[in-house]
Image (cartoon, rainbow, N blue to C red; front, side):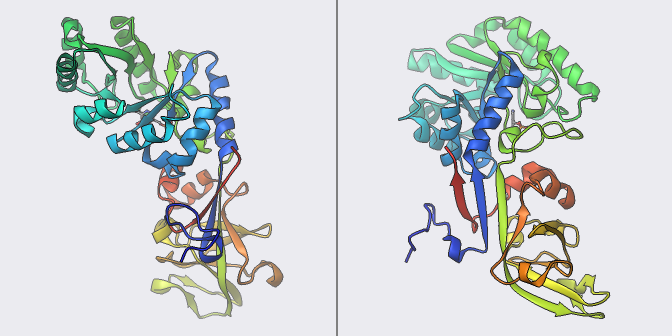
Amino acid sequence: MPTSDQVAGGRPAATQAGAILTIDLTAIQSNYRRLCDALSGAESAAVVKADAYGLGMTKVAPALAVAGAKRFFVAQLDEAITLRGILRTKHPDTEVFVLNGLAAGPGEDFLASGVHPVLNSLGEVYAWRTQAQNTGKALAAAIHIDTGINRLGLPEGEFDALVADPDRLNGIDLRYIVSHLACADEPAHPLNAQQLAKFQVVRQRFADAKASLANSSGIFLGSDYHFDLARPGAALYGINPTPGSANPMAQVIRLQGKILQVRDIDAPQSVGYGATHHATGPTRIATVAVGYADGYLRSLSNRGSAWIGGHKVLVVGRVSMDLITLDVTAVPRDAAHPGVYADLISPDHSVDDLSTEAGTIGYEILTSLGRRYHRIYTGA
Ligand SMILES: *Cc1c(COP(=O)(O)O)cnc(C)c1O
């Protein structure tokens, strides 16, 4: 039977969960406004694919709409239909674009739900034009031109064919010409300028459509990259869009794992599966109720760190499915005992910090956040 503080979506109550994930919606809103300021005039969309990077699209998207976001991007058609349903009543003036395009699902489903495809090939352009002819009215879409990432979008040859025969766009209400940067988080990478130059040429060919190039990091490459619309995701959620420099964004999440047990061991004992950590002397080990099943990545074995009562502590031994073990020898006993929460992600230890320890990027940490956490949304 659900307890009174059990939240929607079958997530556990705080008293029954191994960890508490707190998501600050006000911080997401202030990050959105900060990006708008950095754009000085250009508009900012909001990318909320993958359940708003793991933070919960149902809560995050309306908060962004309240902060002023009008255009939303997701990857998949089902995400778009869910989002349309979330925004329809209170934010009817918002638009939803599907980055994976018409390959994401049937054109009829786009029409029925009122979401727009980002067309990624001449074949999709043709299919959407046909759909428009059959429907008897112009249909909104964006077109993605690949300028060098070689992932999605019209390759150069298909773009040339489109330019040679613009009638292929008849019946398509072309809202945006889109492209995507491969190396925006590396400002000195030569591919940035190359993609920009190609995109400027593309844009001249479709002078009537608005243009969109920058993701989070692209916004910080300078105003040449801004065009009409930016498409930030990661920066909204607190990930540093300018790696190597101070993070201009506010932290959004806090993750606290509950200590289940504390034990004293001494050499020559070892800790955890595979006996990969060896005590070299008297050691106190705290076992915390978070594991790789919760998205606390196994690569953090013997590499992650956490904070307890103002003390930095290290993950020792392997991360297992439901548990991690921390060396709390240096923490006073009254600060590290069963029932105390260890900060796994916090202002002292950001998503980016944890991702560096794990040998990955903050994006993967966020989108891996588990379903067993008790979630608390603050603000908004
Ligand atoms: C995911 C994505 C974005 C957002 O990128 P961030 O780096 O998270 O800001 C923008 N555009 C496209 C095409 C994407 O796939």
